[in-house]
Image 1: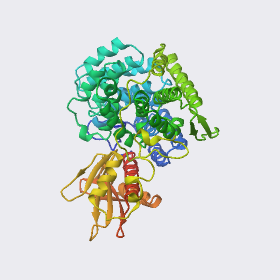
Image 2: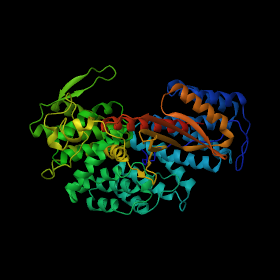
Image 3: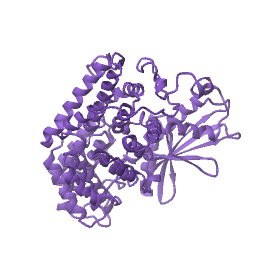
Length: 562
């Protein structure tokens, strides 16, 4: 995400240090402060969570309120990191109760961060039936009380009430709060301003307001340049409205461009259902089957239950339409997972499996909600049929040509056949490293960037700002420098050096270092590759992908520091 307002944020104070400003200093237990520091240092996983939970419980028993809050904030951040928003409700509730009983316990920045976590906990209802409806409503009412009717986060509350009402199938109430939300700017805890039009357009499209959805998306963007999910998220939000009430050719171009990025991005899993529905309703069944085959493994580890339900329903729709078109005998490989063996399923069998999965998840949501809204919505999706004759898809040099998963004739769906044009022999020929080659690799990924006056290519990916430039006497060295968005105060200089040393000890890329600016510490890393003998475009894409992946991981580790 995220762009997708998925960031967790982090505190930058050192546990156990004196409190300043607007905080009080309740009794601290040194052993608990040390235990929490040790728990934070454990690798991500069950042992880490268990250790932090144990510190929270011990802090409660010892009356160390601050350590209990610190431990629960660490739990919240861990749950967000692993996509387990459904587990946020209890630690958020306990943190809020502690701050109510001990005013001034948190800094203003920490209190604002806790409000954001409270929003995430409310949103968890939309992603899984494992969160109770009553407890979510209570948490939302509490959020409304804290931000006030006229506060900067009032639009956030209106948005949440709108989305929850829509989730329950209460369209009149959803429309009522939509009017309060429309045209507003998100407050401090309200998520990405650049993605707000896309979130509104998704609701309007769900209500069949196709023209209104397109109008919303065509409003002048707000802070879109700062959003790492744009423009792809807005392109996906407009796919079905363009197909139904706009220009199918625009929808085709938007699908190809957005999927070029979403096919690999873990946080983009919720968008895949719309890509599949576009392929089904736009008549691109070959491409729909190819995407379904490529993305099917992600269904085993979805970002949330709602995204899994929609992916399964959209996949079932593609399979049903492919069966009607005489493609029901095609084989799609489903890899092994857990105790399940790998299997090659025909389209008809896969469609039945996906329909069963979607129906089961919809039933779980409806049982929790006390409605039949999601079961009815999935049934409506399965009843849809192509809207018009398919329009040609723009040429796409990102191939879906794995021989064991992609049906014959995928090239007819706008995907380049194997070994032709830029993806053929020319793609493997060595050439001199240039700025154009670097930008072409980023264009192929669908990333946003700018080129400064010195020829450096700069972009933002998650918590990392990454710069690509040509170094060396002849510009033969590809140098990638990643800087973490989070900076540490100068008082944590020794901790920053220790972090970099530990990173360099355990990992090859990027090479980590701390840059002392006097008042603060910038944590950065770099990767340099000597390409004096030339580089093939295909090789450069691998190098760029690796630099971005490792840079984002590094910046994420910095953001996760206590």
